[in-house]
Length: 348
Image (cartoon, rainbow, N blue to C red):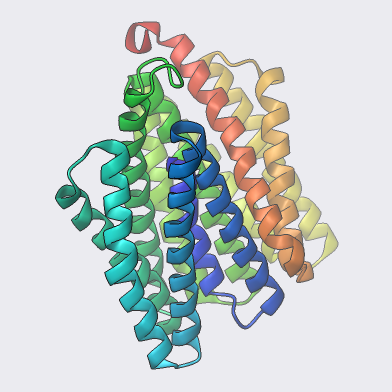
């Protein structure tokens, strides 16, 4: 739930940047629908068909309002934008707040302010895009993303607690928290990274700089997790490897010749596969022959997105962007499982 709610924020940011590139815009709109369908199926798996149908109606209406607001803002149609905002405030927010209250048994007056705040944050992302205020845009993306995953953190344990036969175990255990935290951080890194490469390829230097700041903040969050688990020395080594991978990624995106592109790919593979798999072995005991295939798949998926951006393969881009993100979930789960196995006293 955290990943789907967080992804929703990122897709809104990505689609709002692409109306001038119709095929890219259409691809991310399609991905927005896929995200909503996946959320609906997740709800269905927990609470059944009728509740899922209600969720789908409310969530789809929200997406329609957000898209209408984007179009209204971009085309300077103030009436369309105002109508969409009114629909979000007077229809979606109260309906979704009541829905969450019904499925979690949390009083609606406690949920309503959270949903309202999230809507304001989402609107801020769309407005930032129009103004091309990139430092604020990326700050608002990270804030809204964090709050979306926090909503998931609040909802999921409540639903799991109501249906222990479907969701056995402790949904709030330290092991669950670690797995969720690593998945969230790596998902955010993947989508921010492809926003940065898009800016680099498109020559949007101010956006590229803002995206770099957001990626640095994401790296700091990962550093905090690994410092807590393995100590400062191991976390510092991770920082060095992670920074090298990010530098090689932007080098690959910025390469203007075949040799420079190949050189950047070699550097990316060295940092994000060879060095990172070695770090995982040293820090968690995860064997390199276990981690390397997942890390290699992640690098391949990432470079596919960058290649799409270079080729203006807009019809494939959104789906490949999601595939790259999904590949990071495999890595996150491997790292979490290895850390939990290494520290049984903490996670047992």
